[in-house]
Image 1: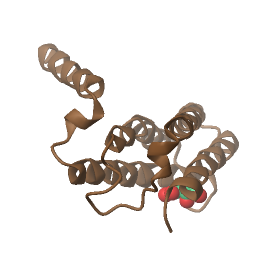
Image 2: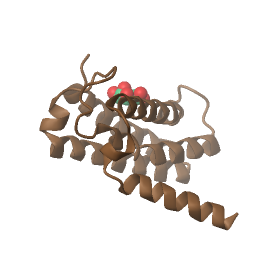
Image 3: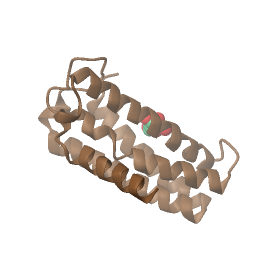
Length: 151
Ligand code: ASC
């Protein structure tokens, strides 16, 4: 079991270390991957945010589990934005992502940092802290969507 875990961990490390382009055979695959990762992240973040804001019943354990998953998944989508993946599939990504790379990456990092804070708040079970943190995550999502996603 431990060997299997180590093998999976090594593969995961390799996947993140490879240049983004090398991970996908075609731009379409990268586009599908990043959209799928955003979809999964949004599902789990959405559950935490809904609980934090009292839109669905609060369950600290469910919130913590979902925040942990959202935090892990928040690291995934950006490998799908390699060079040459601005077209070639069904995407609303704007060209500025690739011409303002540093700014886009900074936005990604900001979202990941806010998600990590939400995860910490969810682990503490403090609903008010979760509400504040979820608001900051939502702002980080929105800011990049406003700038880098077509309507
Ligand atoms: C979500 C979600 C987003 C963001 C965004 C915030 O829950 O799926 O894309 O928050 O709506 O403005």
